[in-house]
Image (cartoon, rainbow, N blue to C red; front, side, top):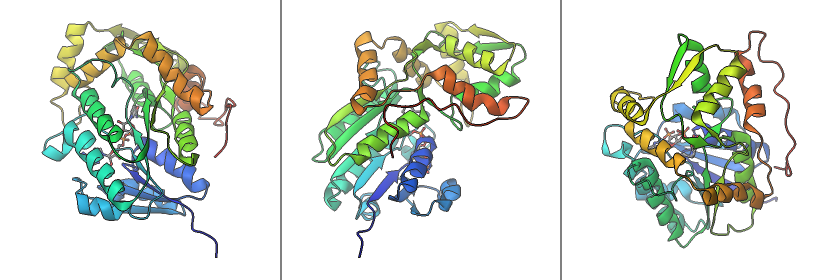
Length: 331
Ligand SMILES: NC(=O)c1ccc[n+]([C@@H]2O[C@H](COP(=O)([O-])OP(=O)(O)OC[C@H]3O[C@@H](n4cnc5c(N)ncnc54)[C@H](OP(=O)(O)O)[C@@H]3O)[C@@H](O)[C@H]2O)c1
């Protein structure tokens, strides 16, 4: 009898990165178990033949987590949130640190040796006012002090056909009445294609043992947010004046917008973006090294954004190409 395919557990696998990763893994025969608070969120993934969806309580309570990871070859933590909400299990401290601690402990107890953790770029920069980054940094410390074979992946902002970055700006720009106020215009970002992130994770998944190293992942083009949003407007053919707001006005926007039930921008987002302004050259080079060490050539933002934005084109989306060849293109 042939050996069953390895089981990979994706905590937070119902989200943007999780969906793309699950599709890739299923295509290569892995068994996948997605842990989610709400099975309905991952309903459309049921078409993947080797996928199981497990409803998991928001608190990732230790015994339930132990059962959820039992039998896994590898546990991947994709749980994350950019905004906090009401209730202790919706705060950064719980979402990033508490859940990571429970997952790590469950993996240790269940004998799951391999643990892959997705954090965020910027945790190494000193920006104590960003509770998002500080909680991500504490989660990383929890992983580093574990007895597991781990790898940490820290991507910059990720874009793709169903993201919350490129598509959000595209939608807002198309609705803008000729003027578009932009918070934190001078923040410097090097957006990274979801395909490259999935490729990086796939390379690590294929490793026989994770090497307890951190992989910072950035795209090859570093631009200010203002330059990025102007480029998106150009690609869409939207005629709109994009006006960068001052620091004070950006902070104020955060203070006002964070009162909405689903805030598009908060004061904590402001401090997170301010940290991007202070990312040093050393960190940027380290970020490029992450892909290099994995043998991947990240794809240029403008070329790929043009492909993803075709759905907004009046003549229809057209074929989803070109695909820029990578150094590695394997499963
Ligand atoms: N997207 C980016 O640009 C980007 C950039 C840098 C780093 N990252 C990091 O990459 C990871 C994956 O990102 P993503 O874009 O896929 O995020 P996402 O689409 O928001 O999905 C994250 C998942 O986390 C789970 N989650 C969120 N809050 C939770 C809570 N309080 N308790 C339990 N589960 C919770 C959700 O699962 P359920 O709702 O199904 O339970 C959700 O599916 C995250 O750690 C994120 O911080 C993302």
